[in-house]
Image (cartoon, rainbow, N blue to C red; front, side):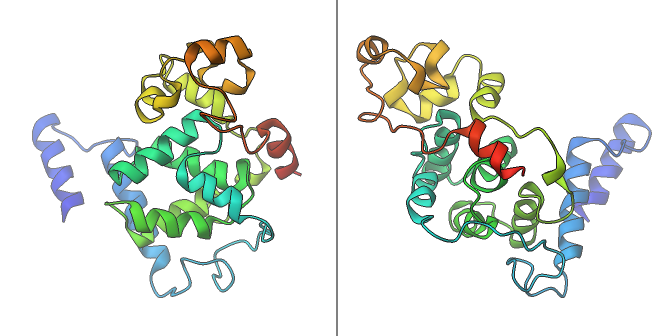
Length: 224
């Protein structure tokens, strides 16, 4: 009903049908698609018995430390950590942030199953929707719907954050430890000389964590 009301309103204002690429209607189409795919599939939110999900050999041993740091926003990658801390504080994330942290947890860096991320999102997101949330986790992790594992490009959490938030306002808001860091080091604080860290009042490895993974090495390995 809501979908058609949107179309009716668009026709009344613009005198025609909205293009399929319109943000709101395209998101509604995705929602209905995920609802349809989850219908009569009680295992839709897991990997092992889910017929539409690829059986990817995610890491199973020694993942708890990395998983906990991801959950708490302590990965050492400021854009990822800012998003995870926003989730804990507010119960919400922009879809760009959701995709970034999901990619980081799964195929991008940590190679941890999307099921772990799904559980965390369902617990904290105020707008959590089982069908949509599980569907997006499978999609972003390349477990279903699109074969992204063949893609040679994997989003770098540092450059991605820098492109989306060039002034660093988002990072500084949710990671106050880095509020005085100069912008040239804000997204890769481990590269800042010790004197710069001291001047900013934030020593990496003490006030703010060291990165838990080298993205360039991890993403290359994960694409193999």
